[in-house]
Image (cartoon, rainbow, N blue to C red; front, side, top):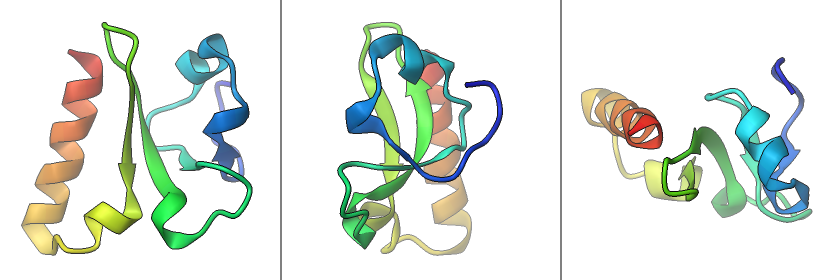
Length: 79
């Protein structure tokens, strides 16, 4: 899965498929795809944890704070 795709349901993916997702890929968690279950894929961390930014949690951040949170989560997924 090297190219960006339409929104991907991460609950349906295997560990290997998640590792193949590009950082920045739009994702959902479940079929409903409501605002709180849509997000941005950051990656799989070294300990095997899935790292994503959920739009519901990002909504309260504006401007530079929003960008810094996205950068932080992308770095966290790589560490």
